[in-house]
Length: 204
Image (cartoon, rainbow, N blue to C red):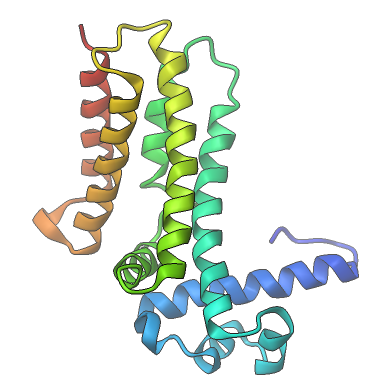
């Protein structure tokens, strides 16, 4: 939260406390996993009381579900901000959005580890699965729109839907590889892989 020289309003203070709990949840899940991320540990990480947590969230499950939703909404907000750039050609925006998946503020080790924990838990927790599905569809819609726009000014070799599905699958796979430290993959490597894929979609 940006520094504010005046006292916080009541609404700002509520939002600040809620966001503090959600950010602490990301860090705690990253360190402890879903099962180990207890309300007590999250509140300790946030420097908050259990009573404050109960004021905003009725249970650990509600808190972690909100945490997962915030991770997705933050990532999509970053990409939407890039997508509002008034460039004459939307193709560079696809490159920039893909790269943003591996750059701050959308990417850091805590977010990566928490994402992996939630993804694993979604196999047996319907609530997490639903959040992931819903937000993945929003990301699909966003990238599909960019690919459709870019295809009118560039030669798209495959359908915009195929291009979008491929890029999203690549992004998920690269995040998994980095999380598991496979093949010593770096974020720079991941960005180059995305660039190569996107070029391939538009190369005649």
